[in-house]
Length: 154
Image (cartoon, rainbow, N blue to C red; front, side):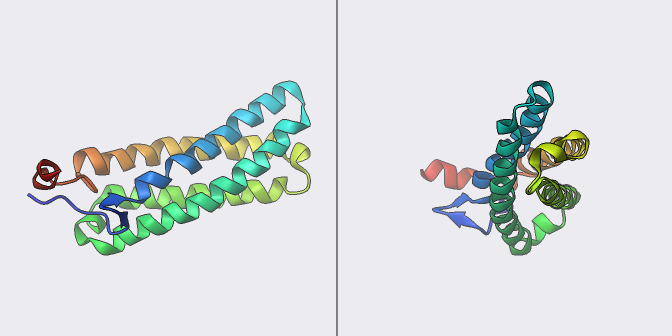
């Protein structure tokens, strides 16, 4: 049986899974920096969160574009309920993190407690759920996994 294929690829490698580790790492790092700032009061941690949020949002936009291409490109992918939970949850995370960035802009230290930290916790919690759904698509439904025939040719 042929697996659902990613539409957005480079040399037959799906782009979406190449990009998603970066915004995840940046957004989780924001949460860590928020806690470190809360404990230390050092303004450097507050400034770091603005950069992490900014880069996370930008790379998330590229990952979303690749994911959308995959969604549009294969009906079998669109038919999976996990895909919609994954995509919708990640879109929500990006909206939350845009709000998080906006409230910090120009007043990073004052914005972390309590709202910045609360938004970071919510975003991290949603990422756990959407990551679970993403792995369901790969491991259960084999989205983007090379077919066995392709794998034996290489």
